[in-house]
Length: 371
Image (cartoon, rainbow, N blue to C red; front, side, top):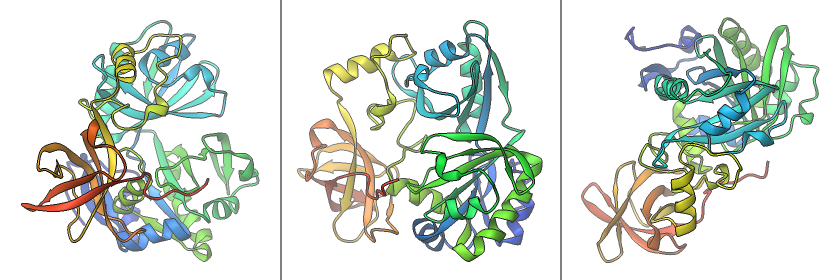
């Protein structure tokens, strides 16, 4: 275990040792990359269930009479369509269309929203939100007060149901229940969301209750194959499901449309939002760059930052994420390439350790389960 006290830690840090975690520096946080092995944990989530500590994520409470219109000005999706107890995936953009962050918005009540942001972006995002406050709005950065656990996989519902009397089947995808009692752990927000491509839940609660809930879940989940999981499996799982990672698929230089999350960009919503003009122009004129899935032929794994070339040797883009897929047993990558090379079946080359490896554009997501 690392003893670097300069890194931030979640309230579950001391519990990691008990389960044999290997910890790493992840964006300034000391977090588990794995407990057993990445492959074992990946398979657990695909076939049974995995439990993740994602308490490093940031949370901002937005309240006030102007909360809805203010958030709608900040983000690309349409917040006015949200009902209470419904969640929304969206992006915040710069005026030039580049991405500030991707995030989830939870409508807790009228004039009350919880924004869940990426851990490495907390300071930047909060400053951006404060800079663009308009109307009667109150912002509270409650990141240090809230823990988040994610239970993901085919048996996640069965496991979690053991701890609560509410009928989890009634919580549909991207909806949530508030003030849930999980075997004596009260006031938990239970959200049917996740970052793995599987069914499951994200659980928000105060940091002082997180360790108790972690232990209860692992105890009741043992017979259903629940395993503690780290960031390594979280990354391979989200990659196979083609879920964007900020800093790779989304950056200040990559727009949500280029990253392939156009479903979360409502350029036709009535109100103006930051970046709307550029994103509208991108949509109307057509993109010059697109994110595609690629499969490498032969040996070699495409990694983040590797250069991508046309079949004739012209540099056309780069890999944003790549790995040897645990589920599909092949080298796969997400690549941001010139739009003319984005058609399925297009032959490409990837520079892997100074060697040119053949690749082809393939359909994404690489893995999809009907939820």
